[in-house]
Structure formats: C-alpha cells, structure tokens
Image (cartoon, rainbow, N blue to C red; front, side, top):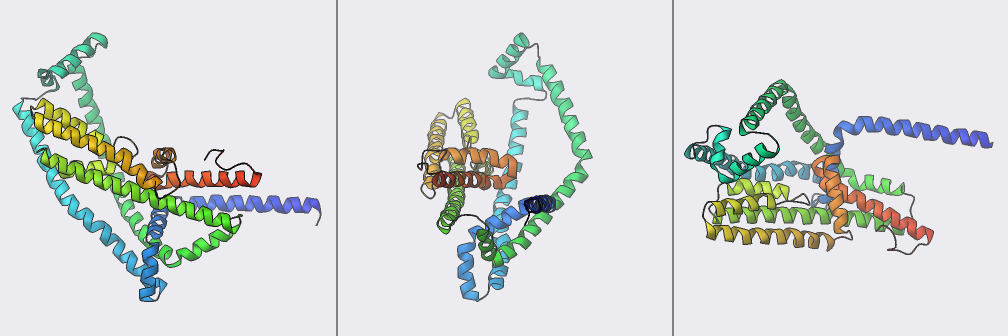
Length: 358
C-alpha cells in the first residue's frame, strides 16, 4: 500500500474515532453520574452477585433480585434516620427561638449585649468603619435577594428534584445490566488494553483494591465518627444528637474538617454556659474523634491497598468538585490509575521502580 494512502487511512480513522468519541460524550454526559453510581454499586456487589447467581442459576435472575433489593436497603435506613432527623431539627429550631426570646434578641444590634460580639463590633467600627446597623441592613437586603431568586427558580428546583428521581431510576436500570453483563463488559474492555496479561492483572487488582479500600475506610470512619459524636452529644445533654451525628458522618467523608466542625463549637458553648464537667468531657471526646479520623482512616485504606494518604487526600479534594459525591471514590481511583501507568512506563523504559512519582 502506498505511504500516502496509509497516512490518509490513519488520519481518517483518527478523525472518525475523535468524532464518534465526542458524540458519545454528548450522549452520555446527562447520565454520567447515574452510570458511575451504577458501575460503582455493581462492582461492590460483584462478590454477592456471584453467590446469588450460583443459587438462582441465572445472571438475569440474580441481577433482577439485587436491583430490587438495592433501593430497599438504601431507602429504609435513610427513612428511619430521617424521621428522627426532622423531629430533632424542629426541636432545635424551637430551642433557638426560645433562647432568642430569653435574651431579648429582636434586632442584630441586640447581640451587642454579648462581650465578644460587642468587642468585634467596636473593632469593625474602628478599623473598617462598619457598624452593626450596616451589617443588619446588608443581611436583610441579601436575604431578600436570596428569597427573590429562590421564588424565581422554584420551577427549576422542581425540575431538578424530578431529574434526581429520573437519575435514580436510570441508575437502577443500568445497575441491572451491569450486574447481569458487567463481567462480560470488563472482559471485552480488558482485551482492548495494550498491556501484557501480567500487567493487566496488576492494574485491575490495584484499581479493585483501591476502590474497596476507599469505600471501606471512608464509610467505616464516617459512620463511626457520626455515631460517636451523637453519643457524645447525648451524654453531654446537647440538643439534636441525631442531627449533628448525621452532619458529622457526611462531613467526615471529606479529608479535612469532619467532626471538628461540630465538637469544637459544642465545647465552646458548654464552657460559656458554665457546664465545665460536660465541656471537659466533650473536649476529650472530640480529641478521640480526631484521633479516629487521623489514625483509623489511613490504617483502613493503606492496609487494604497500595495507595498513599497524599493521593487519597488530593484525589478526594479534586474529585468531589469534578464528579460530585462519587468523586470521593473516583478521584483517588483515577490518581491510582495514573500512578500505575507511570510505573508500567518506568518498567518498560528500564527505570528502577519506586524512583518516580509513585
């Protein structure tokens, strides 16, 4: 074949592949989150899926059963927790309103009866020329603007909630096919990877270990921190332990902050309110929670997969803004994939392992 014809065929093939790839991105972009969640759940359920297949003697039967049970196992615990959550939120709001009436707080300037706020107001007036009245007017105008925008976007909010329900339904639909034919899809994708079988095994084993380690370490740490903080709030007679426990469990999935956002203000409030014994207890309890986050999470993740704490930290911080909630897992997995490919390139070039970015 002439060289010019070979060059033209290669350019044409690359152009067609690029156009088809761009078209696929546009097609799958609205369902990207649903596809990621479906693939992620199918991967986690794969060992159970194999056992159910053997019992029911059929891929479709096992996939259908697990697809039906998945929303039940997700929604029932959330519904049970949400009942207490909503009840305690209403109690917390009533308590805040009672405290405001007790301290006779009707306007923003009434907060100056507290020495710390009064000193902050004096400092602002002296150094920035800002008074409490100006801050109050800014808050009122900002609140009015937010309410106007919320009213104008109420229709869009409804459509967004409907889109979430549709996305959940699409996720379940895709989950069935990933459970039924996921191993076949992975096998065909494995054939397209231009690596030898040994490196393919290492790559898939690395990604599998990292995914399970991130899920296991993050979930166990978050649930334990939320449970322990709720117990600590209940012991210290602080309001809404379920509310703050749920919030801490969600915040603990991020690599920074976590339970600190809840127990540090609680310690300050207990000291201010004169409950010294409870304040000292809550301080010790909070330091224990910080130890769990700093010791247990890296231990659970590093003990189950070969990935550094820095990669997990950077992957989560970058993955959440890029991919949403599933970025907690996708970010570190992508970094792990990049590191593994760099190691393979170093091995192919004859460079010593461990001398590069890994």
